[in-house]
Length: 494
Ligand SMILES: [Ca+2]
Ligand SMILES: [Ca+2]
Ligand SMILES: [Ca+2]
Image 1 (cartoon, rainbow, N blue to C red):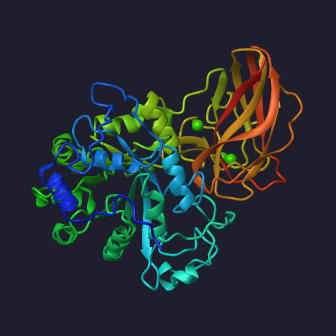
Image 2 (cartoon, rainbow, N blue to C red; image 1 turned 90 degrees about the vertical axis):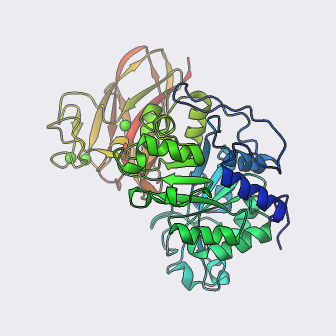
Image 3 (tube, protein in one colour; image 1 turned 45 degrees about the horizontal axis):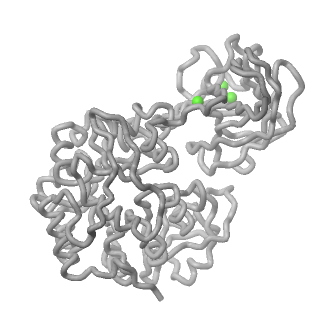
């Protein structure tokens, strides 16, 4: 049983207003909403990102605000953020708590993946099979709703060694209910099930929350939109189908998801994007390389001008899909990426001390298997994963030494930004200035080699102002298969 909400008005007045707003490229929401708290400013080519007005408050009007913002593609349009598969850093991807967490963290949109069960019920699942993200196996389409509900979702991004949670595969109806008052839902993978999805949106009163998406032929898209006035639609374009922009004519989608493997792609050229941005919103993805050249979340964390800032200023993005909701929201508020906290010291794993094998490091296999040639001739395995530069192929028996400049005397706690899909992922000890080794620190799975997380070590050390050495050693009797991005020392006492 679903509870009707304020959006339960996919009826003529709204539909006409919406269709008309989309058709004429209206710069403000048509009709239904009169609350005007548009105190937000957006990054432009001439100014850094400024604060959002009222982000992350949730509450009854958040979805209305996001709906209205979505229809705004003026120069002042607010940058909207989309949480890829929900906030999977806090909950299983495509789960109900991941939807809540995404909105809690300030996203206006959750990107969810929709597939049909054997009995035709839209549920959330990214892959064609349930294997990666649940304790079951087989295609989603081979399970009835009752059967798929027996499965339990795995933590975060799932994977063979990832722990189960008590969460179940949500129906789309549950997901829309969860989002109804909070924001928008991007309905990825759902185009083949668009009629079933439409019925769910109508039944749950969430027509104004749901964003259909496809790269289908324009005639097919327009037939659906004509049959379902009020349906919000994003069209995916790459070089191969960039002509769809002209084919939509004066009945433009509310947004375009623009994907460019390189900045030289035709779809990424300034005159074309200017035309698109003049008619519609521009959605760009930053999760990994090849979605928008190398302008990724990880590159943005190092320096926003390597990613998100250029997506907005050069490529006209007014919607960004990300795996780092918290970080992109911080950037929108402050203009900063993953900056070192005040009073802390950070050393990049790839910036190990000079001196070579046996002096600065010990690496068990010859050469750099990571392929990023930063330290020619060294055997440490340095890789670049979607903008994240780190030491990879971390193996038992290996060690790395760092020189750190401590700015103030005090006690410091060490943490490490790591990634690994394995459980256990590994273990390390730390020794300062040639002293004794610490207790072993367990490296926890992040459920992906390419998704990093700052993990506390529990190791604390009193350090005087000045230069210190830190050695990180990997015991050879522990399983080891993880990546180290950086070490950080946070001062906790004087
Ligand atoms: Ca090596
Ligand atoms: Ca190695
Ligand atoms: Ca690094």
